[in-house]
Length: 91
Image (cartoon, rainbow, N blue to C red):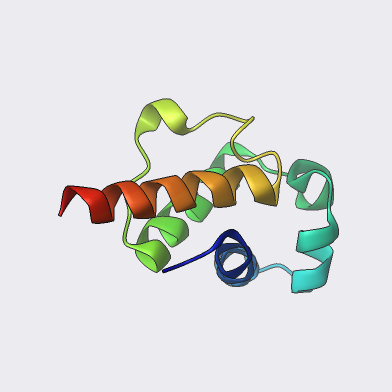
């Protein structure tokens, strides 16, 4: 079972890998806002969504694709956590 910290670690790796960033996991985890750290434009969000969906085997509905969701690591990790546990409860 994934807790929030494990999700944040995996998510940091996805962000670095899929957005091809030259930053560390610590940079991402200590950032107050991801958009200020590396600029979250629409293309970056799409690439990140695809990476998250593959990494965590979840689907992010279009209505959740908001700037607020992708503003920081915690908001994304909480959504992933909810999606993972909701998926397990449905199976």
